[in-house]
Image 1 (spheres, rainbow, N blue to C red):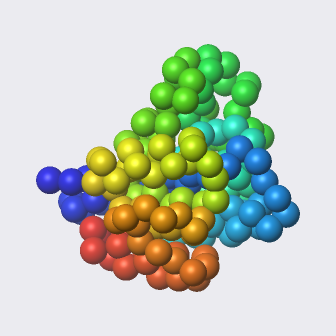
Image 2 (image 1 turned 135 degrees about the vertical axis):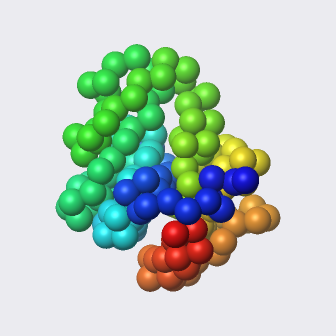
Length: 162
């Protein structure tokens, strides 16, 4: 049985946010809104734990009173951005993308590049639903035209598993 198919309490639900290590004002605003939305629904936010959209998503989650977990590529917890509650150093570099994807019950993909694409693909390989907020052209993703639509998709998914 896929983790997404069994009944879980919301505080057990992990939502991985994947996206660029760089942020523009527009993508930062998007990431913060997604972080607030995830925490507002009572879920735990997981990400790569560093800067860029990871930091902005964590910022939004903390603004909403949520919990954040950063899966770090190196061996130093202090590398985590200021909004990570639980920093998990892996020492495995980009290979940590597998952990970011596999630790999620559901993934939200923001704009990004190759690292983000690898996380999306790993999530799909592991049978995790992936909500697309980054304009990705990858088969199997759940397309959302904005945060309100992503929230509707996430809420519907949460209702199915609870």
